Length: 124
Image (cartoon, rainbow, N blue to C red; front, top):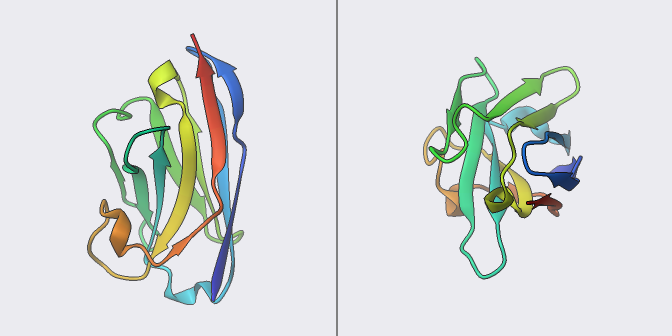
């Protein structure tokens, strides 16, 4: 089984930056995609970004394109989400997740394993 541990959340002012990390351990050889999702209070969970572990190609939600960058370190089995130009509407709990299938990159319910989440709060 794969375990995911997120870190890097916190409180930041609008326009600031944060870097989230997601460290994977366990049976990671079957990881196809790692993704970031977020859920704000009273809202549904939404896709943020994803990276294909082999090759490193990425997908982003329109709301974060140009501001967020996802990367990975194969040796450390860790994915990162660099978040710049943060806005109050980026406030949410951010979750990383693993998808072991080569499809459904932006579809949360197709991801197999989830981390515990990390809170990101952007003040205006």
